[in-house]
Image 1 (cartoon, rainbow, N blue to C red):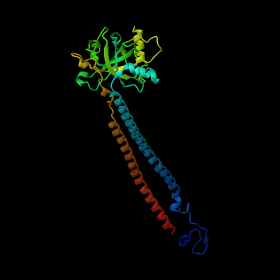
Image 2: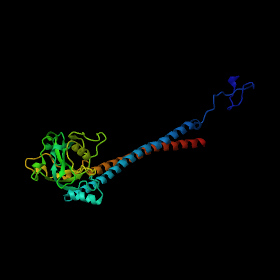
Image 3: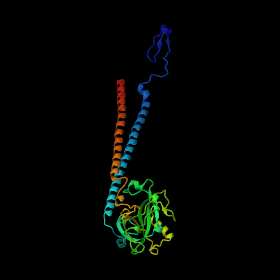
Image 4: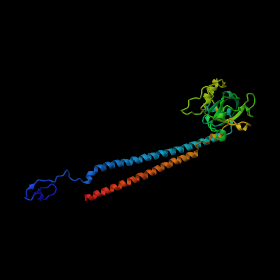
Length: 344
């Protein structure tokens, strides 16, 4: 009977040859599903994740471009700061030296100075006359040689600054004098200033010209002070160095007066090389105070490098994510077109 059955449409009865109805349904686990119905949840989820990735990716790279752009702007600010600093120092160094007494007098009258070489007086050229106490001499270092010194004379092992207390002949405050730089193997063979032609009178009074300097700022890895009783110091701290000299027997003329900051003078002239048979210590020159390892021109180069990198990142980000977005748009268009055709 089943062999002669004529199958009807979906869900209808089928009739055998003898006309006996046979309740048969075409068995199926489930009706065929439409492509659009079966794939819509997965495609929706994929679309959501791809849209999130399309936002996060550009945001990360554009943030990197913004960071490099900020570094370029910072380099431009550093360049301006250094140009202004060099101009300010150059103007002060080009002024004619004046006696230290006049500087002290103007400081007292203007009430703008507490004894230290502040921004208005640092790098101002002055002349001093007094007697140096070589018995209380201290060395600071190691330090690199002045830039104008020949590399053969400077050697490869560095050297030290020679700091000596000085009593002024006019009754002014006791100061510290940086007499110059000496090579490490010559630090115990240092010529006295009293041998210079300018030395005169009892105690060998000398006249020196130099610039006022402020104390050095140590890094966080160095101790707050140098050796409390020794000769060697890691950095220049005029107050601490004067206290050490006093503790070792040096008599300060202003010891009974109110506490004042100790002045520090970097000697520029007379140069040691001006004296026959003399070399050490080597003085600095005025150019040493305006020569920097990183020049303003180098800051401009650094800024241009950072800005170029920022522009490259922006361009590559645009190209990369634009090329990724185009296939997705084309696929969506084809998918929508196929659904329209099936609907028709």
